Image 1 (cartoon, helix red, strand yellow):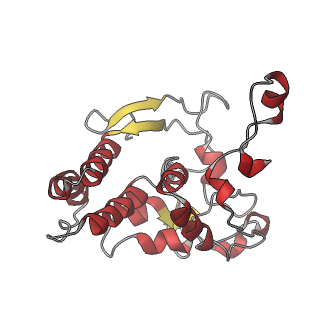
Image 2: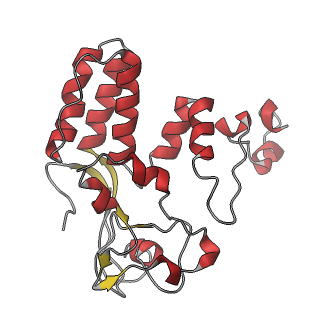
Length: 230
């Protein structure tokens, strides 16, 4: 259900259920709430708090303690404590069944992202008034009201970034968004997750770029390492 949606999906990687890893999706193995095992893909309270009251995308994305999933009540105390428990579990993209290798596809690009991209581009060009339509189209489709009229460019920028985060949560976009938004955005985001068990977040400006791998430096004498990583 939801795969290859003609009104939403632009490009997605195809998977088939119960056909083994490589052809079946790994979502079930990685993300389904469980009483043993687990992984590091737990939502933070900061993400949960980002959703507005009445936004149904919160429940489509995050499982909270006491919620029911696959016929069981989720109890975070039963999760493996070695994976930085936040008390929350991702359910976006996870089929509500037990012990299956899922057939849900991985969506690489969908129409909602195009609308957000358009709004961001318009606003950064100074066309803030024109940025309302694509963002409101996304908000209205989930039952949320229009953005308030009269936003400044800076206020619209924050509204667009907020919408992008909650709409595209766990779709592989947010990390790269934060990088391109700059050091202040990255530092703020890292500071928001400092309370995760067994994980420290230390901000350094060099985290905005990746180091060139040592192997590439070895085989290409014309390359030099980023100054930040020397």
